[in-house]
Length: 301
Image (cartoon, rainbow, N blue to C red; front, side):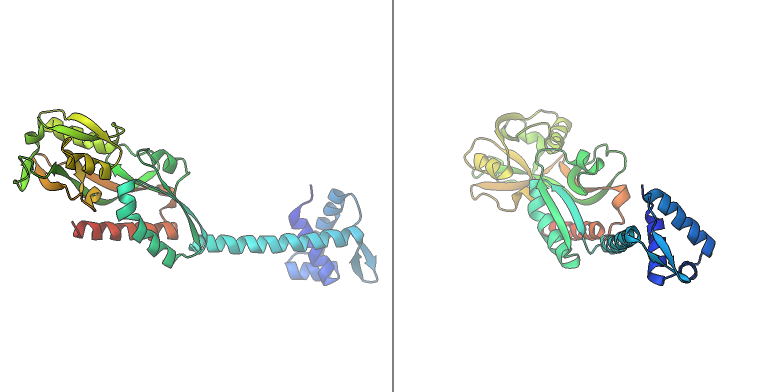
């Protein structure tokens, strides 16, 4: 196999016209240059230089390798430039995973800011709801995921808290509890519930834990795959539901929303990022933008 470094030595000899001149330009001794050329000729299996007066000139094989050495040098320079652009955040690609309510409240303003700060960065945006995106982050298939925490984070994954999203009870208009401003969770023990589907995810587990603390298990009579449908079921009188504030951006006209206490369920929303990529400029910008979007979301509650 041809040695790329020796090909560059050959190129220096050919372009300078002599071994001595190439040695001066490269900072080597003439004998070192001659040894490099001799080794490259053994690798090529053919003479690469021939003497002409006090200098040398390339053979056909020497010219061929010199041309390819120039091409390799140009490609290396292009690679260095591309790497510098990537390192500085001028180019690259970010894979982002999110769940629906975070997508509507946090992701759009954060991505708009990222595009302004790093217009050359491509974004692979994917909704993973109700799936768990943490394994994708841990395995390097995603750069950032917005998740409900706390839970055991995979090794090497850093969690950044974005905001706390409290749950509210959603009641049909005219419900016996609709006149109260704040409702004890235990007062919902005998109600039919509109629950999340599929059950078993972190958001539903928060509700189950809160209900257990209040001394009951919710009686789920209707399952809904999103908060918009859940509000429709509640408005129709099919049950009550607990929905986080971020899921109530567009409340159904047939419902009333009330605070809960004793206890108040809260879901903690975090950004999950691999620890090894925390200093990536576009990723750091995106994380900062998500924090700001979360701050505005909290201020608007």
